[in-house]
Length: 252
Image: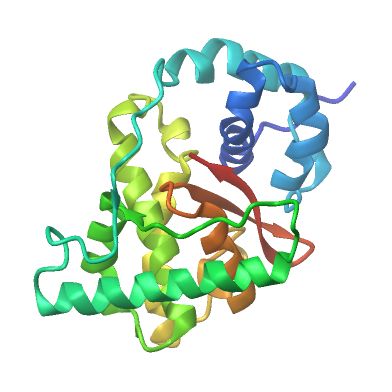
């Protein structure tokens, strides 16, 4: 019987992300590892041939002996949310412009989402503000974006969330394991920002790469993604599904 090919680092990273996204449900026994392997993992691995996919036993061993032992033992406390016109944050003219614009765009997106759903059974989500980390990174990164364009506001908010997530989870990253470092979705913040800048400068993306870039996602999907993560400082996992950049999971 021929040996299966060595599992690629990118495939390992995708498997890790699938587990990371469903870890809480696995721990509280709402789903099993087998459920995630059969129902969720195929979406994360859709861009690779099935011959490159690992077996369930590989996933189970990774979780038991490597990923779970290195995972944080306690949940991080939520970052504080900055309310509209918080005097500590609305100081300089630039901050006032950036945060006022982004808060307004987020509020409009939430209102639009409520009208899209139109369900009386589901309480509408209210936009109350971004976390302090997201505000900080949005202000720092704002020069890369034209805030007079809604699409670029959405991109800035989502990329700022990635940077905030990276900063928030940095102390809990596993050390000394290079394959694991590449598995953290937090590394995408810098990559997404550079990819956006290259796109604006006219560089074409490398077709041989499996990486999916936020700027490739439609404006409508970006708006929905922003509403999905809301005010909690979460990030979204992107994958190429059927040739289209698609958000497939939320990681807190």
